[in-house]
Length: 283
Image 1 (cartoon, rainbow, N blue to C red):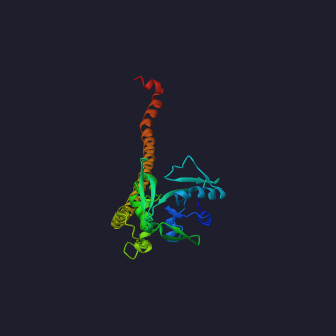
Image 2: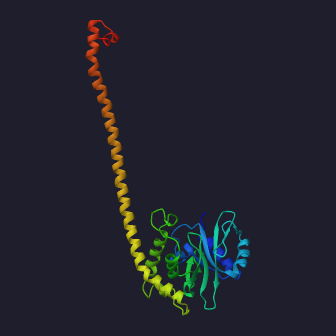
């Protein structure tokens, strides 16, 4: 079920008015940063302090959203759905005195691990349906896609055009925010956290940006080449089918002609001697 922009701002405003600190994350955060809805969204990802999950649940309940215990996996995520199957995924975070935030995430094997967000990563500002919202920054979005423990080329991460959703999102953000000091870092100003893990992660992310952008361009070109080859093979296949049909028609015609030529003299001879076909076959 499509999660509309007007519903995103409705949920965000309700949580904000209810005193729950909230940041938009995931696909809607990317569109907020790009200030345009680039694709359809089936859910809404939100970051909420872990001690505000219960107040958030009460507010979402007033909007018709109920906790889905089958999908919820605390402290990784809390899932809410309404009667129309709109889905909200809350990612609870624990905020430290140094303003870094810790999220317990889960890898593809189901193993939990610690993911640390810097204060800069939660300083993003975007626009959805004409409303200004808090969201994760472009730098944080790219860092997440680099450091989260899943493959950007896994089948569930590929879009219908065959390109990785993560690499396509990174490319879109880079086109708007760039990779230099005046680009991504400008939208996510550095703050001194005295946290060596966060600093090392941010440096690692920035080093990987260019290589990922190049990889995305290579994959896009490869996809275009494979699409062209696929079209050529389809055309060849169609041509072979037509040739096969033509050969079958020709062979059918030839068989009829040859059969007539071979049996005609035998029929004439039988008529001449006054013998039937069965008698001729005994001689």
